[in-house]
Image (cartoon, rainbow, N blue to C red; front, side, top):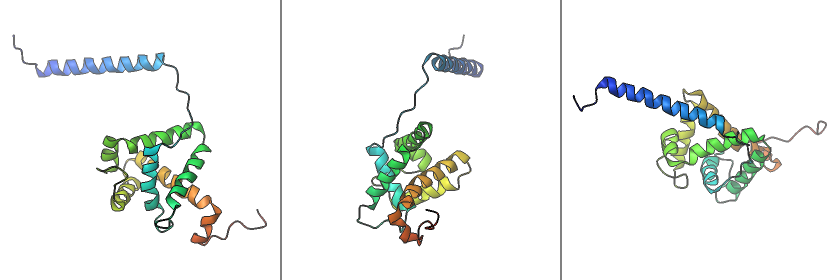
Length: 172
């Protein structure tokens, strides 16, 4: 009897192993309680992502050397807190992907941590997600973009920089 694993035996073991994992995963989902969504609070790693991404998305709108980056992060955090818990969970998942080194490298193509990533690399990452053939990455780009741009320009102090005079007095 040959001790070498034949191709047929290898495939059988693979199929049985896959079925065992699928069964275990199904049982786990049936047994555990559904997770209750919780408020998403920005941690240090998430703040590092935003501190790297926001100046690229808001190129020309932030004043170098000012507290604008910190202000935009605070506005983003405030905007996230106003969203439904289910949406906060999706945002949390997005930032979990971006902060985990292997997924950051694989999905964003950034070999270095966000704190030392170059603006050109971040711009290339954003552009690749914006035009990616996978719709989910395009959606993630738009979520990230709107999460940065929306809270920034929602503040009245930024309206003059884009020439917006504010809402019509009769309507406000």
